[in-house]
Length: 154
Image (tube, rainbow, N blue to C red; front, top):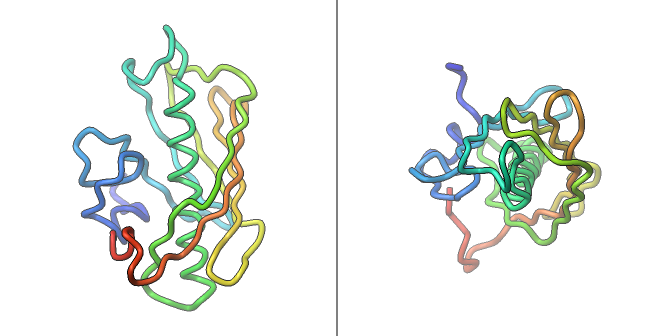
């Protein structure tokens, strides 16, 4: 895919394990705005498995956390009419694993903002494989201010 992802566009030097383009050993998720959602297709490797053929739950959590965070940052940027997203961090998130996630093909992530609150966004997301929703996520992501350790991380 030649189109740049949100991560590649706004944070090419980020070293985040889940979404940082500059992290050599990271997951390298690539999120794209698509209508009112942000979507990502990601291919697991065998070393992402919990047991043969099934994706590790911690990897699922990282995928949803980072993808939902980028959804929040992008939509907060749009809402404010800015050209750069605010640096956002996870205030809270939860993941519900609905079924084992096959690790043999593409995994699809989708997320959308369900509520804005001043400097934060509440996001819902889903992870699907083989056409079935395998996990859902819910989180609050906050735009940090100068003085926060994550400020200017992208």
